[in-house]
Length: 122
Image (cartoon, rainbow, N blue to C red; front, top):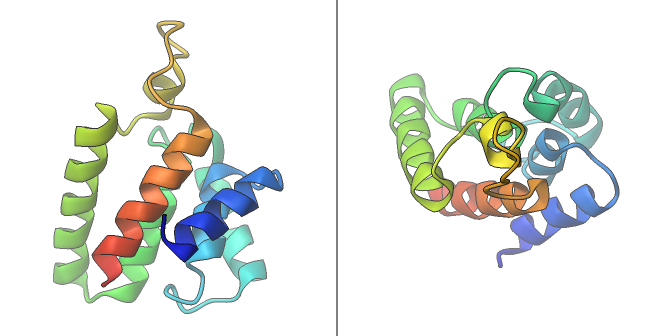
């Protein structure tokens, strides 16, 4: 596991929401400090926007790091790879809220999102 992915997992272990765990681990890549990253991530937490918060945080970083066209390509690649790993980007589906059968834990989504993001930033 990459160092930034480990950092994201450690933030999550400290009860940061999934989105804040990912965004705080990559805050320098997004051009922000940890405090601002945590605040920016809050609207994404807990599937409030439909998609997994860890996914949205990773996409936010890609949008901040790259010019618009390149960011769009990176986000598409991220979503493709995350979906291949987990079958969906949607929080309720990942958590099994609709079926009672979780696909991936929140910690697992944080790990997957952080690992993929780290790869796409290189």
